[in-house]
Structure formats: structure tokens, C-alpha cells
Image (cartoon, rainbow, N blue to C red; front, side):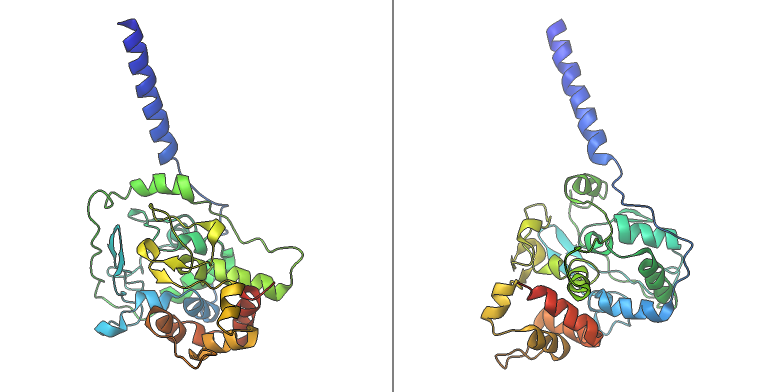
Length: 291
């Protein structure tokens, strides 16, 4: 009897310890929340970060940033919410601290956010950029119509489970440039892994929806992250790209093979990359085609 009680105690203790581990907070370096946001630069970040393509369902006639089309995944359909300045339907009542927590650590006022929201990438942004983006969103036209509800079945609708997911797969941090690379290269890498989150779409994911960072940018065959082609140097060169033509494609959608990119990438070009600065287009092209 004592032996079985001992075994039971070990199992219970192990279970409690495991639960505590998987529920512990996952957070990156603290942010400077005293910074004053620059609305003009924040508006650039709205386009740089793909906010419009995700949070504006133009096909359904939704207003700017008032809610996007549903993202279908094996875990359910996630509808990007209204992120206008409306205090009820949008995020107008969020503080900078709450916004920073969502962008940096994947925790919103209602609890843990699903990784369908790319906080894994936004965490790399600087403190000033977070303040600028917040200021720009707070300056948007408020839209009182909420986005449709996401359709996430049990057990994936248990938000607390995202705490365990983060302990397994999320390492919040700020971007660190490679010391022996050019400023342009590092800017391109920052965009691809940070706010532009190219890596989020163009990389495979495991069965739990986590990115395979060792295979970053090698393409997604479908499933959790949706289907997206490889954008490694080898894949791009094979399709006839050099840095100049890749930057041009991201600006106008026309490929070196005289095709036009459509679908999800077409939306990204229309709502995001076509409105980037030439410097950023050249930077991401240089990074993706670097040897």
C-alpha cells in the first residue's frame, strides 16, 4: 500500500509540476512604455506589417481595418478582428501597455492570443515602432461594427492551452542584426522575420501549428499555414528573379515570367508591399537573394 501511495504521489507531483511548467508566463524584455508614438510612421507600419491585408475584408465591403476574412486552419477558422479606434468593436479602449503585451508576448485583454496572430514576428519590433503603430491605430476612423466571431471548436477554443504552446514554441525577443552583414541585408532580414512576417506564410509548420524555423522560407505545402511557395535564394533564382526584379514584383505584382501574382500574395502586394518605400523593397530583395 505504501508503495502504491508513493507511486501515486510521484504521478500527482509530476502532473502538477508539468502543469505549472506549461502555464508559466512567457515574456520577452520589458518595453519602454513612456515613448510618444509617431502617427505618420505608424501608418507606414500598418502597411509594412500586413495589417490591412489581414484586418480588412474588402471582398465583403468591410471598412478599413474593421475585420478580415476568416483564416481557415486545421484548428478552426480565425477571423481577424476589428482593430480600429472604436472602444467597443475595436481596440480603442486598449492602453499602450495592453497593445504592447499583445504584440510582444501574445497576450490580449481577454487572455492568450492564438498564434494565427503573428506575435512571433511582431515581438521583434522595436519599442518605438510599437508606440508608433499604437498611435496610428488609435488615430484611425472608429468603426462600430465588430468583426464576425471566429469558429474554433473544442478543445482548441480553450485559450489557456496557448500558454502551453508558447512554452513549447515561442521565444519572444527583439531583433538582433548580424554583425558582419550590411545594414540593407539586416533591414531585409528584419522585415522578413519581423513585421512583414514573410516567414509566417512561406515556412512549413508542425502538427501543432508551430513554425519549423530550421526550414524557414522553404515554402509551406498547405495545412496549418496554408500553401505558399519557397522564397529561398535557390527557389527565386530558379524562377528568374534577381534583386531588382524581385523588388519590382513586390511593387506591381508582375513576375519575370510575365505572370501576375494573385490570390493571397496579390492581396499582400496590393495592400502592403506596393506601398513600401523603395529602400525597404530593395532591402528585402537583397536579403532573400543573398548568397
